[in-house]
Amino acid sequence: MIHIKSDAEIAIMRRAGKILAHAFEAAQPLMVEGTNADDVDRIVEETIRSMGGVPAFKNHPNGNGSRFPWSVCFSINEEVVHGMPNGRKIKAGQIIGLDIGVIFDGYYSDSARTYGIGPLADRELELIRVTKECLDLGIAEAKPGARLSNIGHAVQTHAESHGFGVIRELVGHGIGRNLWEDPQVPNYGLPGKGPVLRKNMTIAIEPMISMGTPQVDMIGEWDVLTKDRKPAAHFEHTIVITDGEPDILTRV
Image 1 (cartoon, rainbow, N blue to C red):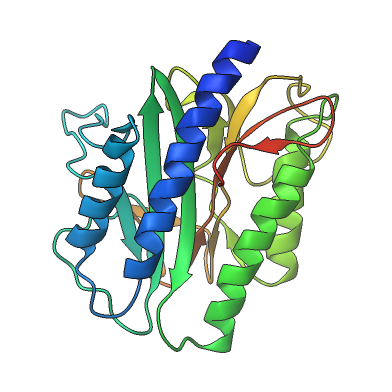
Image 2 (cartoon, helix red, strand yellow):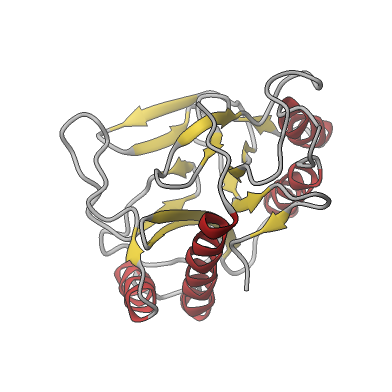
């Protein structure tokens, strides 16, 4: 069931989103060659807790008895999502997806950004740029009275027009008192389908776009990798539907 938030709930989620945006600002200077991923995780957690939040991903269960041991998902190259810091060093030529969640006063925010480290090939730079554009285009469709599938259609059309693959096994989602709520927000599909978007619906839109095949493999308890092991990119914002333009909660 889709939960339409009250204005008071939106105010709390706005605070959760602001904390998350500041966590990304704190991580940004560390996203360079030579940084230990554990240091990124530490800075993110310290920033979140210093502002009264809780890292949403740390100790989050996966339904199979495992709990995620880090505050950030740190996904490199072919890792689409749920990669772990694990002492890995950032290297030139990598594409790194950083996914972070925050809990504040019982409500969640969720966001992701992708970073290109050092010199990248033109096609890799295009992958990052187009994935960010997919997010922007998806958000632009999130208006009251529109159908949910318009978001995914915009993402899919733009990504595939550039020759990239749209991951289908992983989708965006509603968000609020739980990290994952109804409705699911796919990054593909025909327009004009699904629930009608209403004011004070809160959703996380998150295009996950691959350079090659859209198929993925699940490796271990958490890691999701592209099946052909080509790079992927991931951007995400938590937004609220308003009377007009969508309001992005996870930016400063």
